[in-house]
Image 1: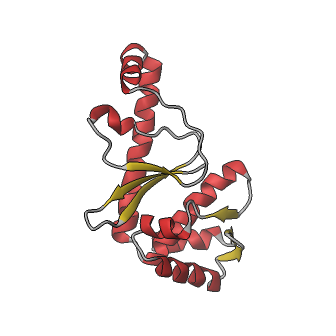
Image 2: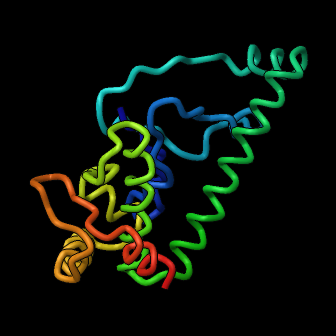
Length: 171
């Protein structure tokens, strides 16, 4: 199940801001806002649990344990936002692709334990999330394959050299 937060730019171009995977809290930022600043789209079938804002606010007020959990989730989200900002603002195209593959690899290890991963979204949406054209994403994946860092397995990728992929992501 994959959910994506999408911002529609005035030009009509979509930008994928965040990809949510199972077990992730979504919309905590709305506790302090009158309206969501983005849309949520299901990239795959999703099972979600909706909690009204007033009910969540009441739980925050009445339960220190719940408050700590919300603060923890907000800190994780802040860390991801900072990482994503650094990725988009300072890394090369291949570095941004390597970063996304490493994130997918980290999430997949918890589920499958293996080195075969899929992109978090389809190619168009992954490219939009990385601030590049779909063709550029395809070229970067081909370059990573030619370097022997990844190999394609249909719609999935095998991470052949995670250490080198990490070095590319950080370059």
